[in-house]
Image (cartoon, rainbow, N blue to C red; front, side, top):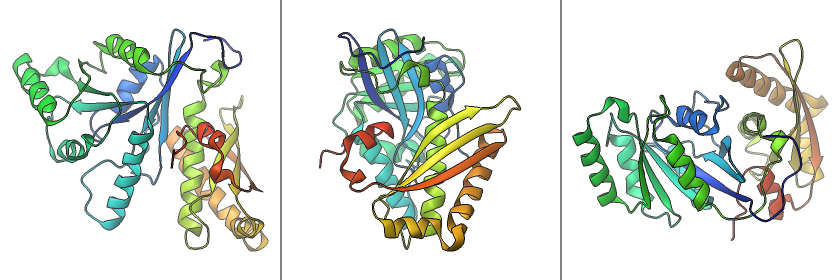
Amino acid sequence: MGEGPVPDETGTRCGFIALIGAPNAGKSTLTNALVGSKVAIVTPKVQTTRALLRGIVMDGNTQLVLIDTPGIFAPKRRLDRAMVTTAWSGAHDADLVALLVDAKTGFDKEVEAIFDKIGEIRQPKALILNKVDIVDKAALLALTQTANERARFDATFMVSARTGDGVADLRAWLAAHVPAGPWHYPADEVSDAPLRHLAAEITREKLFLKLHQELPYQSTVETEVWKELKDGSVRVEQTIFVERESQRKIVLGKGGQSIRNIGAAARKELAEIIEMPVHLFLFVKVREGWGDDPERYRQMGLEFPKE
């Protein structure tokens, strides 16, 4: 995985894969097994994210961008329902959808809620039964049959994310089914891209929680710098983009108080998750019409909505 620009020669393939499944399904373990190194970051709570980058898998000339769709669960409150709708939109925007089911747990309430809606997704779908190393064969076959009766899957894989069994076959299938095209991420950015996205999503969440009544939801955060320092800390520089100068003033707040509060909350949460001291620097810029710019979506790891 050498350094260099995004290849544009013929033969490269790249696509977004929505990895969906109940919180206990083992998405992080599977991501690490697919990527081949420990990059997946798990946030301890459901976040109001559109799509969170989990990891980037390199398979020969193919780049697979794994996006999470947090918050897919059986919704109880109105807010939960809104978040689930948002989460499903991430799956609809992907090139492929991979549903991960804990074979030991089987069809619990969380999985039932997913199967109630997965039929609406038109993209190619793979069913992945995880933890097959601890479930007997008869139960696996019964689970496979039930799942494929409930929804149409293009392929079914039995894997153990923990031991790595079956992961190579899954990776090969995903790589073969994403579209031809240039990579979304340069090779030298692959390792810290999930962390950059995680940091951006955390700051965006704090921004939303603090200013949701005053600020349109269409503000975005980009992590411009992620640099691990020799003392074991990390320097993070982010830009918050808004569409008008009046919004910029709201984000800054009187005497810069709002931006300081947002930065402090984001820095604290990020440091807790990555277990490293964080130096966070926030900048606010006006970028008119960013919501209509497909390149912004691509940089955020999102497909540009067609409508």
